[in-house]
Image 1 (cartoon, helix red, strand yellow):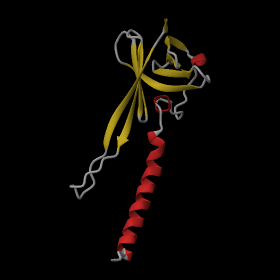
Image 2 (cartoon, one colour; image 1 turned 120 degrees about the vertical axis):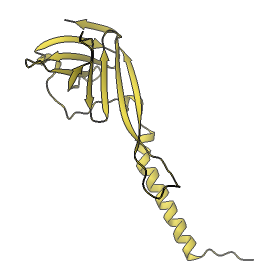
Image 3 (cartoon, one colour; image 1 turned 180 degrees about the horizontal axis):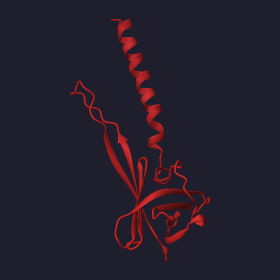
Amino acid sequence: MKFRLSSFNQKQSINLVLTSVGALLLLAPFSQMSIAQASTIPEKFQIASASDCPNFLARGISAIRSVTICQNDDSTYYMVLRNNNDGQETSLPASPVDNNLNAFIAPSGRFTYNVDYSAKKLTIVERRLVITHERRRPIPSRPVYQNFTTTETLNAILMS
């Protein structure tokens, strides 16, 4: 008894294989992303460097980066994140979380940077899109996001 695949089944099989390979190629970079890569800082916000800080408030140093909070002459705050390995700096607009100016938050795209000098922590939260497959719903489902958190301990703190 001979079995023969019809051309319709071969076309379906080829489409399924190509779709699967395409999906894997699109998702492969995300599966290999480490926490260090996930917590890299986007460079689209460049206000000033830590050396240009008009009114220095605080600086904390972790094993990976230093975090400096500065106040501009117009009473706005910004956070300068400096990579300890290559010296690359990124500045982001920041807002105080408490009245004592011990904690600040700086959102930047899908990342949010929280520094708390009293708790000696820098917390980086990345909001990632999670791909879900729902077969029962004929209409596209709403996007689902998940937060990935990285916490760094500040080993040294300098406050003004």
